Figure 1: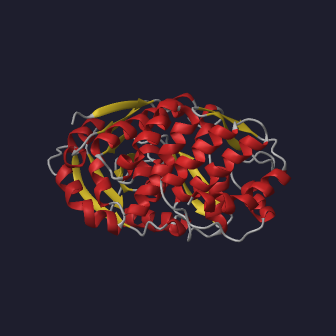
Figure 2: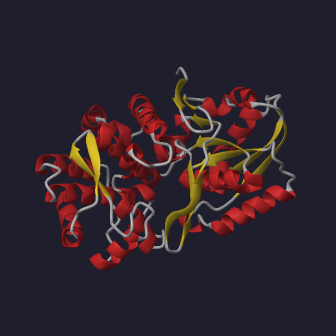
Length: 371
Protein backbone atom coordinates (compact mmCIF):
# COMPACT_ATOMS: atom_id res chain seq x y z
CA UNK A 1 0.00 0.00 0.00
CA UNK A 2 1.08 3.59 -0.59
CA UNK A 3 2.43 5.39 2.47
CA UNK A 4 0.11 8.15 3.66
CA UNK A 5 1.37 11.28 5.39
CA UNK A 6 -0.33 13.76 7.72
CA UNK A 7 1.47 16.85 9.00
CA UNK A 8 1.08 18.02 12.60
CA UNK A 9 1.86 21.63 13.44
CA UNK A 10 3.64 22.38 16.71
CA UNK A 11 5.56 25.23 18.32
CA UNK A 12 8.78 23.36 17.51
CA UNK A 13 7.81 23.04 13.83
CA UNK A 14 5.69 20.63 11.81
CA UNK A 15 6.31 16.90 11.90
CA UNK A 16 4.90 14.10 9.76
CA UNK A 17 2.85 11.10 10.82
CA UNK A 18 3.39 8.34 8.26
CA UNK A 19 1.05 5.36 7.86
CA UNK A 20 1.83 2.38 5.67
CA UNK A 21 2.13 -1.38 5.65
CA UNK A 22 5.76 -2.53 5.94
CA UNK A 23 6.93 0.90 7.10
CA UNK A 24 8.72 -0.69 10.04
CA UNK A 25 11.16 -2.41 7.71
CA UNK A 26 12.02 0.70 5.70
CA UNK A 27 12.09 3.50 8.22
CA UNK A 28 15.78 4.40 7.97
CA UNK A 29 15.23 6.54 4.89
CA UNK A 30 12.83 8.74 6.83
CA UNK A 31 15.20 8.95 9.82
CA UNK A 32 18.11 9.95 7.60
CA UNK A 33 16.33 13.18 6.67
CA UNK A 34 16.23 14.43 10.25
CA UNK A 35 19.67 16.00 10.44
CA UNK A 36 23.31 15.44 11.26
CA UNK A 37 24.71 12.05 12.34
CA UNK A 38 23.46 10.85 15.70
CA UNK A 39 23.40 7.80 17.91
CA UNK A 40 20.09 5.94 18.05
CA UNK A 41 18.73 4.70 21.39
CA UNK A 42 15.69 2.48 20.97
CA UNK A 43 13.34 2.36 23.96
CA UNK A 44 10.90 -0.55 23.99
CA UNK A 45 9.45 -3.37 26.10
CA UNK A 46 10.63 -6.99 26.16
CA UNK A 47 7.39 -8.24 24.61
CA UNK A 48 7.34 -5.72 21.76
CA UNK A 49 11.02 -6.25 21.09
CA UNK A 50 10.59 -10.02 20.96
CA UNK A 51 7.95 -9.62 18.25
CA UNK A 52 9.33 -6.70 16.27
CA UNK A 53 12.89 -6.00 17.29
CA UNK A 54 14.48 -7.77 14.33
CA UNK A 55 12.33 -5.76 11.93
CA UNK A 56 13.25 -2.49 13.63
CA UNK A 57 16.95 -3.30 13.47
CA UNK A 58 16.68 -4.43 9.86
CA UNK A 59 14.82 -1.23 9.04
CA UNK A 60 17.64 0.99 10.26
CA UNK A 61 20.67 -1.11 9.31
CA UNK A 62 21.08 0.68 5.98
CA UNK A 63 20.91 4.18 7.42
CA UNK A 64 24.05 6.17 6.77
CA UNK A 65 22.91 8.83 9.22
CA UNK A 66 23.77 7.20 12.54
CA UNK A 67 26.81 6.01 14.46
CA UNK A 68 25.60 3.40 16.94
CA UNK A 69 22.36 1.70 17.97
CA UNK A 70 21.60 0.86 21.59
CA UNK A 71 18.44 -0.87 22.86
CA UNK A 72 16.90 -0.12 26.26
CA UNK A 73 14.02 -2.34 27.37
CA UNK A 74 11.70 -1.79 30.32
CA UNK A 75 8.51 -3.32 31.69
CA UNK A 76 5.67 -1.33 30.13
CA UNK A 77 2.95 -2.10 32.67
CA UNK A 78 0.90 1.01 33.42
CA UNK A 79 1.66 0.56 37.13
CA UNK A 80 5.37 1.08 36.32
CA UNK A 81 4.84 4.26 34.29
CA UNK A 82 6.45 6.42 36.94
CA UNK A 83 9.42 8.63 37.77
CA UNK A 84 11.49 5.68 38.96
CA UNK A 85 11.31 4.15 35.48
CA UNK A 86 12.27 7.50 33.93
CA UNK A 87 15.32 7.69 36.19
CA UNK A 88 16.37 4.13 35.33
CA UNK A 89 16.22 4.85 31.58
CA UNK A 90 18.08 8.15 31.95
CA UNK A 91 20.86 6.43 33.87
CA UNK A 92 21.13 3.76 31.20
CA UNK A 93 21.46 6.50 28.59
CA UNK A 94 24.29 8.10 30.56
CA UNK A 95 26.12 4.79 30.88
CA UNK A 96 25.63 4.16 27.15
CA UNK A 97 27.22 7.50 26.27
CA UNK A 98 24.16 9.36 24.97
CA UNK A 99 24.69 13.05 24.20
CA UNK A 100 22.60 15.97 22.96
CA UNK A 101 22.81 14.79 19.36
CA UNK A 102 21.32 11.42 20.27
CA UNK A 103 17.91 10.24 19.14
CA UNK A 104 15.40 8.23 21.17
CA UNK A 105 13.13 5.94 19.17
CA UNK A 106 10.08 4.77 21.13
CA UNK A 107 8.91 1.40 19.80
CA UNK A 108 5.79 0.21 21.58
CA UNK A 109 2.42 1.20 22.93
CA UNK A 110 1.20 4.17 24.91
CA UNK A 111 3.27 3.52 28.03
CA UNK A 112 6.49 3.19 26.03
CA UNK A 113 5.69 6.36 24.10
CA UNK A 114 4.74 8.38 27.19
CA UNK A 115 7.82 7.32 29.16
CA UNK A 116 10.30 7.60 26.29
CA UNK A 117 8.80 10.95 25.33
CA UNK A 118 9.25 12.33 28.82
CA UNK A 119 12.79 10.97 28.93
CA UNK A 120 13.53 12.65 25.59
CA UNK A 121 12.10 15.95 26.85
CA UNK A 122 14.10 15.80 30.09
CA UNK A 123 17.41 14.08 29.33
CA UNK A 124 20.10 16.72 28.75
CA UNK A 125 17.17 19.16 28.47
CA UNK A 126 15.95 17.55 25.29
CA UNK A 127 17.06 15.09 22.62
CA UNK A 128 15.46 14.05 19.32
CA UNK A 129 12.41 11.79 19.57
CA UNK A 130 10.79 9.40 17.08
CA UNK A 131 7.61 7.42 17.75
CA UNK A 132 7.04 3.95 16.28
CA UNK A 133 3.64 3.03 17.79
CA UNK A 134 2.82 -0.67 17.81
CA UNK A 135 -0.64 -0.69 19.46
CA UNK A 136 -3.93 0.64 18.15
CA UNK A 137 -4.24 3.11 21.05
CA UNK A 138 -0.80 4.53 20.29
CA UNK A 139 -1.31 4.62 16.52
CA UNK A 140 -4.57 6.56 16.59
CA UNK A 141 -3.98 8.65 19.68
CA UNK A 142 -1.10 8.74 22.15
CA UNK A 143 1.84 8.90 19.68
CA UNK A 144 0.39 12.05 18.07
CA UNK A 145 0.30 15.46 19.69
CA UNK A 146 3.42 15.72 21.82
CA UNK A 147 1.97 14.79 25.20
CA UNK A 148 4.42 12.88 27.38
CA UNK A 149 4.20 11.95 31.02
CA UNK A 150 4.16 9.50 33.88
CA UNK A 151 1.83 8.72 36.76
CA UNK A 152 1.90 9.58 40.45
CA UNK A 153 0.06 7.58 43.12
CA UNK A 154 -2.36 10.53 43.25
CA UNK A 155 -3.26 10.42 39.57
CA UNK A 156 -2.50 9.54 35.98
CA UNK A 157 -0.07 11.54 33.82
CA UNK A 158 0.39 14.25 36.46
CA UNK A 159 4.09 14.73 35.64
CA UNK A 160 5.07 15.35 32.05
CA UNK A 161 5.80 17.77 29.25
CA UNK A 162 4.59 18.77 25.81
CA UNK A 163 7.39 17.52 23.58
CA UNK A 164 6.66 16.81 19.91
CA UNK A 165 8.48 14.02 18.07
CA UNK A 166 10.42 14.59 14.86
CA UNK A 167 8.37 11.93 13.07
CA UNK A 168 5.77 9.22 13.80
CA UNK A 169 6.05 5.96 11.84
CA UNK A 170 2.85 3.89 11.93
CA UNK A 171 2.82 0.37 10.50
CA UNK A 172 -0.51 -1.50 10.80
CA UNK A 173 1.37 -4.78 10.50
CA UNK A 174 2.41 -4.45 14.15
CA UNK A 175 -1.22 -4.95 15.18
CA UNK A 176 -1.04 -8.60 14.09
CA UNK A 177 0.70 -9.68 17.29
CA UNK A 178 -1.35 -7.51 19.62
CA UNK A 179 -3.36 -9.57 22.17
CA UNK A 180 -7.09 -9.39 21.59
CA UNK A 181 -7.81 -7.42 24.74
CA UNK A 182 -5.09 -4.85 23.98
CA UNK A 183 -6.38 -4.44 20.46
CA UNK A 184 -9.97 -4.04 21.63
CA UNK A 185 -8.81 -1.39 24.08
CA UNK A 186 -7.71 0.67 21.09
CA UNK A 187 -11.08 0.30 19.39
CA UNK A 188 -12.70 2.27 22.20
CA UNK A 189 -10.39 5.19 21.37
CA UNK A 190 -11.41 4.86 17.71
CA UNK A 191 -15.07 5.03 18.74
CA UNK A 192 -14.22 8.18 20.70
CA UNK A 193 -13.13 9.96 17.52
CA UNK A 194 -16.42 9.13 15.86
CA UNK A 195 -18.45 10.46 18.76
CA UNK A 196 -16.57 13.71 19.31
CA UNK A 197 -16.16 14.90 15.75
CA UNK A 198 -16.60 12.40 12.91
CA UNK A 199 -20.12 11.16 12.32
CA UNK A 200 -19.05 9.32 9.15
CA UNK A 201 -16.49 7.33 11.12
CA UNK A 202 -19.09 6.51 13.76
CA UNK A 203 -21.55 5.27 11.14
CA UNK A 204 -18.79 3.25 9.45
CA UNK A 205 -18.09 1.58 12.80
CA UNK A 206 -21.77 0.81 13.28
CA UNK A 207 -21.75 -1.00 9.92
CA UNK A 208 -18.25 -2.49 9.90
CA UNK A 209 -17.31 -3.06 13.55
CA UNK A 210 -16.93 -6.81 13.06
CA UNK A 211 -14.36 -6.22 10.29
CA UNK A 212 -12.45 -3.81 12.52
CA UNK A 213 -12.52 -6.35 15.36
CA UNK A 214 -11.16 -8.99 12.98
CA UNK A 215 -8.37 -6.57 11.93
CA UNK A 216 -9.46 -6.70 8.33
CA UNK A 217 -6.84 -4.64 6.40
CA UNK A 218 -9.36 -2.66 4.37
CA UNK A 219 -11.22 -1.59 7.50
CA UNK A 220 -8.00 -0.59 9.27
CA UNK A 221 -6.79 1.32 6.22
CA UNK A 222 -9.94 3.41 6.52
CA UNK A 223 -10.11 3.78 10.31
CA UNK A 224 -6.50 4.45 11.35
CA UNK A 225 -5.63 7.26 8.86
CA UNK A 226 -8.97 8.92 9.60
CA UNK A 227 -8.21 8.97 13.32
CA UNK A 228 -4.66 10.19 12.68
CA UNK A 229 -5.98 13.09 10.61
CA UNK A 230 -8.58 13.95 13.25
CA UNK A 231 -5.99 13.99 16.03
CA UNK A 232 -3.54 15.97 13.87
CA UNK A 233 -6.16 18.59 13.00
CA UNK A 234 -7.13 19.10 16.65
CA UNK A 235 -3.65 19.27 18.17
CA UNK A 236 -2.38 21.50 15.36
CA UNK A 237 -5.01 24.05 16.40
CA UNK A 238 -4.45 23.62 20.14
CA UNK A 239 -1.08 22.13 21.02
CA UNK A 240 -1.28 22.67 24.78
CA UNK A 241 -4.91 21.81 25.47
CA UNK A 242 -6.20 25.30 26.14
CA UNK A 243 -9.33 24.99 24.00
CA UNK A 244 -10.37 22.68 21.14
CA UNK A 245 -8.04 19.86 22.23
CA UNK A 246 -10.13 19.33 25.35
CA UNK A 247 -12.68 17.34 23.35
CA UNK A 248 -10.08 14.53 23.06
CA UNK A 249 -10.71 13.97 26.78
CA UNK A 250 -14.15 12.50 26.09
CA UNK A 251 -14.45 9.64 28.56
CA UNK A 252 -11.09 10.40 30.14
CA UNK A 253 -12.18 12.28 33.27
CA UNK A 254 -13.81 9.19 34.73
CA UNK A 255 -11.47 6.85 32.83
CA UNK A 256 -8.31 8.23 34.42
CA UNK A 257 -9.95 8.15 37.85
CA UNK A 258 -10.85 4.48 37.40
CA UNK A 259 -7.26 3.66 36.50
CA UNK A 260 -5.97 5.57 39.51
CA UNK A 261 -8.27 4.12 42.18
CA UNK A 262 -7.59 0.57 40.94
CA UNK A 263 -3.82 1.25 40.85
CA UNK A 264 -3.65 0.48 37.12
CA UNK A 265 -4.21 -3.24 37.80
CA UNK A 266 -7.79 -3.74 36.55
CA UNK A 267 -8.38 -1.74 33.38
CA UNK A 268 -6.55 -1.25 30.14
CA UNK A 269 -6.57 2.45 29.30
CA UNK A 270 -9.16 2.08 26.54
CA UNK A 271 -11.42 0.00 28.80
CA UNK A 272 -11.44 2.70 31.48
CA UNK A 273 -12.14 5.31 28.79
CA UNK A 274 -15.01 3.15 27.51
CA UNK A 275 -16.65 3.27 30.93
CA UNK A 276 -16.00 7.02 30.94
CA UNK A 277 -17.66 7.43 27.54
CA UNK A 278 -20.72 5.50 28.66
CA UNK A 279 -20.94 7.74 31.72
CA UNK A 280 -20.44 10.85 29.57
CA UNK A 281 -23.36 9.78 27.38
CA UNK A 282 -25.58 9.55 30.46
CA UNK A 283 -24.25 12.83 31.86
CA UNK A 284 -25.15 14.48 28.55
CA UNK A 285 -28.69 13.14 28.72
CA UNK A 286 -29.05 14.21 32.36
CA UNK A 287 -28.19 17.85 31.60
CA UNK A 288 -30.06 18.01 28.31
CA UNK A 289 -27.02 18.15 26.03
CA UNK A 290 -27.31 14.65 24.50
CA UNK A 291 -30.49 13.08 23.15
CA UNK A 292 -31.41 9.68 24.60
CA UNK A 293 -31.30 8.17 21.10
CA UNK A 294 -27.74 9.37 20.47
CA UNK A 295 -26.64 8.16 23.90
CA UNK A 296 -28.17 4.76 23.16
CA UNK A 297 -26.27 4.52 19.85
CA UNK A 298 -22.99 5.40 21.58
CA UNK A 299 -23.50 2.92 24.39
CA UNK A 300 -24.64 0.18 22.00
CA UNK A 301 -21.52 0.56 19.83
CA UNK A 302 -19.21 0.51 22.86
CA UNK A 303 -20.96 -2.60 24.17
CA UNK A 304 -20.60 -4.34 20.78
CA UNK A 305 -16.83 -3.87 20.89
CA UNK A 306 -16.56 -6.42 23.67
CA UNK A 307 -16.91 -7.03 27.41
CA UNK A 308 -15.52 -4.52 29.88
CA UNK A 309 -14.03 -5.36 33.30
CA UNK A 310 -16.55 -4.80 36.07
CA UNK A 311 -16.58 -1.46 37.84
CA UNK A 312 -15.02 -1.56 41.30
CA UNK A 313 -17.21 -1.25 44.37
CA UNK A 314 -16.12 2.31 45.11
CA UNK A 315 -18.41 5.09 46.31
CA UNK A 316 -19.39 7.94 44.05
CA UNK A 317 -17.79 10.42 46.44
CA UNK A 318 -14.45 8.63 46.27
CA UNK A 319 -14.61 8.62 42.46
CA UNK A 320 -15.41 12.33 42.49
CA UNK A 321 -12.39 12.97 44.71
CA UNK A 322 -10.19 11.03 42.28
CA UNK A 323 -11.58 13.00 39.34
CA UNK A 324 -10.86 16.29 41.14
CA UNK A 325 -7.19 15.31 41.34
CA UNK A 326 -7.07 14.94 37.57
CA UNK A 327 -5.24 17.64 35.58
CA UNK A 328 -8.43 18.43 33.64
CA UNK A 329 -10.13 19.83 36.76
CA UNK A 330 -10.13 23.62 37.25
CA UNK A 331 -10.00 24.93 40.83
CA UNK A 332 -11.46 21.64 42.00
CA UNK A 333 -14.36 21.88 39.54
CA UNK A 334 -14.94 18.78 37.44
CA UNK A 335 -14.97 19.14 33.67
CA UNK A 336 -16.53 16.59 31.34
CA UNK A 337 -16.72 16.35 27.58
CA UNK A 338 -20.23 15.48 26.40
CA UNK A 339 -21.67 14.92 22.93
CA UNK A 340 -24.19 17.52 21.81
CA UNK A 341 -24.86 15.01 19.03
CA UNK A 342 -22.89 12.22 17.39
CA UNK A 343 -20.02 13.95 15.63
CA UNK A 344 -20.05 17.08 17.80
CA UNK A 345 -18.92 17.61 21.40
CA UNK A 346 -18.27 20.25 24.02
CA UNK A 347 -16.84 20.65 27.53
CA UNK A 348 -19.15 21.27 30.50
CA UNK A 349 -18.38 21.96 34.13
CA UNK A 350 -21.77 22.33 35.76
CA UNK A 351 -22.91 18.73 36.29
CA UNK A 352 -24.24 18.43 39.87
CA UNK A 353 -22.47 15.93 42.09
CA UNK A 354 -25.80 14.27 42.79
CA UNK A 355 -26.21 13.52 39.07
CA UNK A 356 -22.66 12.17 38.86
CA UNK A 357 -23.23 9.81 41.79
CA UNK A 358 -26.57 8.61 40.37
CA UNK A 359 -24.99 7.84 36.99
CA UNK A 360 -22.10 5.96 38.62
CA UNK A 361 -24.61 3.85 40.57
CA UNK A 362 -26.56 3.00 37.42
CA UNK A 363 -23.59 2.22 35.15
CA UNK A 364 -23.09 -1.47 36.10
CA UNK A 365 -26.81 -2.22 35.75
CA UNK A 366 -27.05 -0.47 32.38
CA UNK A 367 -24.06 -2.25 30.87
CA UNK A 368 -25.21 -5.62 32.26
CA UNK A 369 -28.40 -5.19 30.24
CA UNK A 370 -26.33 -4.61 27.08
CA UNK A 371 -24.18 -7.72 27.59
